[in-house]
Length: 457
Image (cartoon, rainbow, N blue to C red; front, side, top):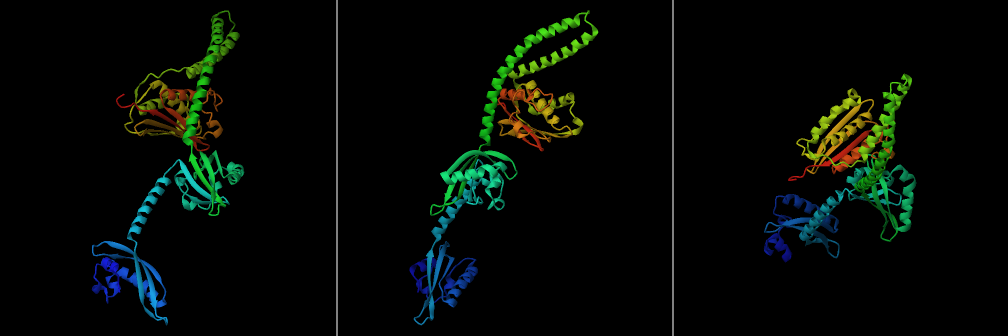
């Protein structure tokens, strides 16, 4: 027997089905033999072992449309247990399968979107602190693949100090209060630490018992850089006023001292031995004058003498000045990676050259036994020129890095600590930014960004 649905799906009338071998009318496409073999294997199992079976196959109707059928095969036994036949109940699940495929596609799309979010990372850990799941943005933020990090302790993502002291306290607070949030530093696979806003919540099971922890980390590197730049600008403004006042106060007595020294040196009656001592004093007065000039240069807010400049050309013309500063040029290799057809920037040629010369000198001085100075220019989305000046020197320690652009801060015995401060102000006056990245033992990279001339401006 067969019902109307079987006739509808197979495209055959009742007389064409009754008495025929069911497998012969199962399908009409090129995969018929394979489908028949699979169907027969499940059917034989029900017959031989007299047990129900479930099988999912397909039927192509008379309109050539394929229908996915979920078959329930039930052996029909007599009162004495003799097999008399098989009852096939087929449920057309085509629409459900289509919806399932659609939902899977949506789910895959959402997973793809979430996995590419770089500012946030979501992961969970059990009560022992082992990572049991990672999702949204984890791989792009930390660089770990699933096979490398799953079931590893969450402490792998924290600094050594955090693992030893802070992490146990954080988890204890989460257990007690249900949630914990704080700014901290996490560690990438590469070993690089970076600032995050870390939120931790309790992960409860079906019985509302604590089963683990949910971590959401937000990368706040950009916010911290902006905070630092604002803080630096405010400090620069305050110290600039102080430097200007100091320079003027020093200049007045220095002018008197220099004048009197010159009078004594011009006096023919001054003894030779005294004259030699006076020349030494005059030399030291010159040093003070030069230092005062640096103060005034730092404090003076001079507007750039703007013109359209090709930064590649500005940098090329600044490089020869290294020879005048007794740099170990024979030990240092200079690698240039200039972007082709870099759009012009609006700026002061002499001021920008001062910045680049200062950065070149610092890079060379960081490599006293030699190394590589890499100078790279990049076009950033036709908006900014990005200039990277990298050395392979000893690097800068984190405690010194945060003070690098502060006036009068220097790690050199003979440095005034004003070179980078002046460079900072020059780039700021050009509506640009200057940042630094450094790893001890690896080297330092200064990154300067200056906006291109706007089209039509």
